[in-house]
Image (cartoon, rainbow, N blue to C red; front, side):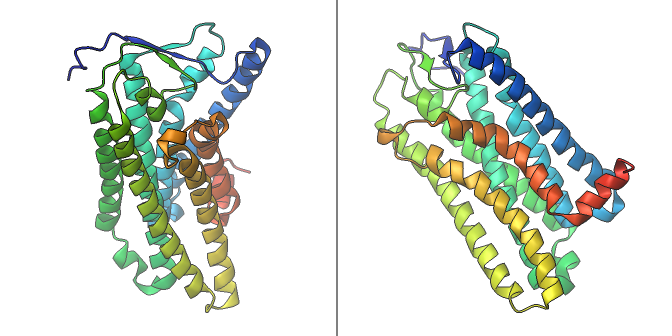
Length: 304
């Protein structure tokens, strides 16, 4: 694939999170620790689920894939951001920028669908417990997983296909720490109003559909749990609370960052940091703290 013939911009300049040298050093230390925490936390869940036979169930299969996705999602921009804190001039090549946007939407779309798959799993486990292992068979799990990544790929490809035709011949400064699609589109030296609407429709529709599916799923589950025995309800609510917390943390920044109208659009760097860095960090913490089986398996693995 070749870029538009009239593009003369070969790199973009990232303004980062702050121009203060002292703050950048502080950010370098802080985000380095956070990134290590993301990798170790999600790796711990992956290793625990893989090697503990008690966790070889549909729910933990999906959880391990969520951890894998989170780890990659945090890696598409965070390492460069950390290194850039030590650089005076923060630049990224056109193809590097394109890659960041592609993987951002690929992994973001895939994670949305994974959360929907996890909601389906919880619905079957709580509302149809006697048929749980039959319904959530390896074939169904594989189908849900492949569908999640397929939706993410189609979503990302549809967004990036437009980018290859855009000419960039003027300003190349991005007021963020990574290449964010709405900000990059605004730098194109042509009218991008229709393209902006298409991006809104694409991202907004995917986010809205996934969010509505999750709302309906958890609404039905909560309604069903209310009529169960107290002991079973307590365990179900404990599991649900972790899932609902993760869904809220994931979708809240999406609403402000990617569904907000373009003509009034202004990226909030705090939300961008939260979405790309802190959500992948909080997910393993939430699932570990609210799940007794995972906590017991980790303690056993660490010989505590």
